[in-house]
Length: 268
Image (cartoon, rainbow, N blue to C red; front, side, top):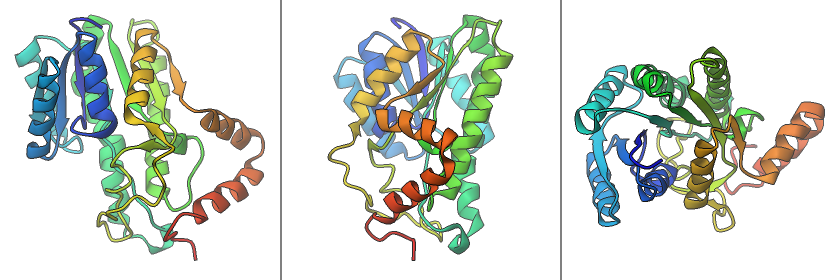
């Protein structure tokens, strides 16, 4: 990955920041995006202190024009794009029956349409360089999670898109990776939207035993080097995918019971 140009959406914190660190330490040139410019520039400063060649660009992935500008900026600063990591994402937590549907539109705009916009904008360069397109999906894209209908829908859509893209580009030298972390310690759940679209503020889960963002990023880096197609990162995730395929009714009950145990669960 030395001297490869890596564009990471949503790189200000969590898995995105950790990805910038691991690729940067391996000698990649990194452009990260974020909606909050103060947070973005703070992260850029921290990364540069580690000797990482990084450039920050304020952008909202759900805005198509921002993705075109992001691509132009990467070419202006680094002259090429080798790898796009579609990391920017948001989640939600509410029962569908209680939800303002604009919340799902917001989640889909970032988690799904944001990937379409960024990928199409960067694709000509990645085709030219026979590079990689990476999507950060979720086990929730294989098994729907109650209370996360919009999030699961966006991740199911993302997995379908990446599978289609991988097939379309099969003989053009482009690597497409679908990466599915399990529960990962990050600030994502703190920023989860409630039924009215406001951030819930606190994670409903104990994150002390979860995979760290750094470990997640290391695994994605290694899968990128190997040009792996699908990366399911935990044994729990692999078991969930398998059981959901062959014992969906059983999994309905298990998943319901598990999610209902969360503090302040939306289940009545």
